[in-house]
Image 1 (cartoon, rainbow, N blue to C red):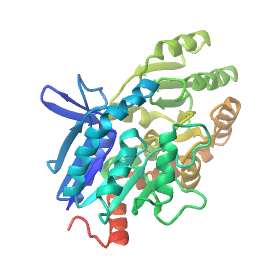
Image 2 (cartoon, rainbow, N blue to C red):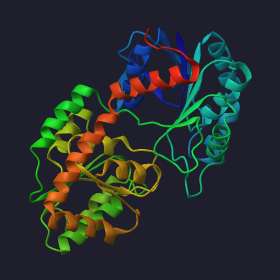
Image 3 (cartoon, one colour):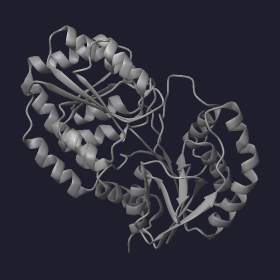
Length: 384
């Protein structure tokens, strides 16, 4: 069986090697094991890849490059119109030769892929993964709203997988965890977490892009409150961005030089060393689907304190680990941390709850779930 995947995942060809965003590449490497061939149609950029990129390891994957277009700026978004004819031509060819279609939303190319699937993919199993916030409360791009409208009304006549559980969720929309690690990786992390207890100095970790939207400035405010209350702690900020130096200076101005370390970008193996020691992961961001760093940290018994947006509240509530807090409520973040200090057994209980819940974010759990809905929806047994 031949699966066509259409996504916005940026790819780079450098020194004869094609690589893409590491998280997606790892996921597709595992997904390819269920099919005879997996074809990935996605944009190809020039220049050296970011450090977070990885090459494919599965020999079953064929990459189909298309012209990149889109972005955050108005002119960037207009560039999509010039790319559409090329995208449609490539999509039509690949859809016609595919046995099943998998579109990863939201993105400009994903919107075009939904129309292409409607035109040329009728009757073929179609699975759309919506990785963003399924029911956002803030203003967002019109194209995202259109994609959710299209998928919510099941115009593609297929399955939609989303992060979290939502009120009035139609039968064709399936709650689905984004995989983050293998069963073996989870088992090793579980062993590390078993030895953890809440102790001083408290150890916090942030993993992500070092910018205001991800909440780095708010984390420094939380840290300043804890310092003012005499709580011993250390915060590791893992990630990079153009505003990193501004945040470093802000930490100095708040008297946090000894308590906060800005470590820059780290690969997964390096980040795991920080998860191993951390008590809490802080993520007061303003826009998320499900941040994989939370499930990665939970596997190591790190209790998540994150913003109350998207799927985060429902997933943390079901896991009985950590808390979802309004991103701008600095006082609540600080009070919550203090409540764990006053009740270390509660922290230990939620730490272990997080470890147990994290098993559902393994690739093995993900593949079993994919097999299940292919069988239920289309009577197709994958991997046979």
